[in-house]
Image (tube, rainbow, N blue to C red; front, side, top):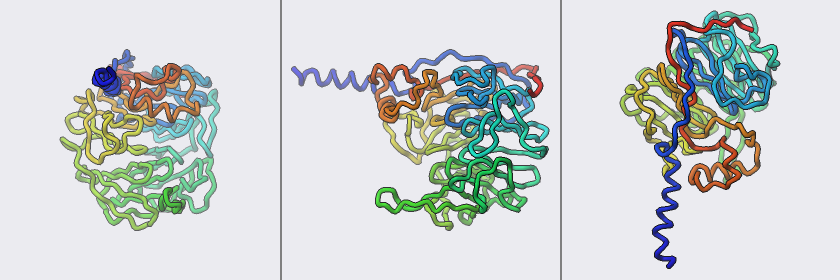
Length: 419
């Protein structure tokens, strides 16, 4: 009798397994957000527990924990999780944004730099006082935050501040910095990317430099050690790069021809760049974080590559790949922005939706610190319909596509004063 039932049991289990595929999951209601004329390049910025989106009218929208006001909106100063986007105060004059820890940093079109929330090792802005301008400089051009905080000025100088317990800031002097200090005396920096342990920047001559909490050896044979490169060192001999991003154990860079390269950080300053497979239909927007890369091609289709932690590859059968895998239902978003969202991936369509997959950005039940979450992530990733009943109240790790908001163009832009 059991032998006769085995095929039916197998079909039953496979059906549940297949629920992890995005095509079988319902699409939540969409929140429509009206935006004005294009002023900024759209961008997605995320820390562990909040997400910020810069849309093309220059306005900022946030979701997630807002205990330090880092997610903006009307719930400033509360621990309540907000699962619908709300606008940041300050109008529609923002041109760049970064999120790191319980803090958000943004640059206005007048070149000033502002902060909401508390930066580890850096400035703490109480919710009732945010946003607060950082310094008096009016020539900030780019901002990035993760393990440390880094800013680029239009004069080509690179600045660092925040936590520096593991050499994240690349400052030879060591010690955390409350306010921005020059990373080097050079004035030819052209781009930057903060990572959780390793950060990197590209110079105007096309060379890439890295610093931070760099590991050498293997944790399996007892040889793993932190060599802690405290000052920037050049990665390889290539000199044709225009943009960088950081993974946990490597640095990615795009060259002038639109091709992606990776440089693994094995501990020795002498590193070698290797080219990655070409993105189908030519590379458009791309972003990287943790162990995964997400990209949009020129036709507006989304692709992913890397390790399949928390379902970010949108394919339950693949654990790791260097090839590009298509993301179902994410296509036709030409001119959009690709980004990371905590442990998930995101795409902001031009004049359209914000789409997320991987770890869902929702912890409304506040159970993220449960000690069994790691096991539950594993269950959710492979058999979401078979998870324990109690787990159903912990949506933070559900592997689902999520439409958080739909941004709709208009001829009018919000103009709230800074407060």
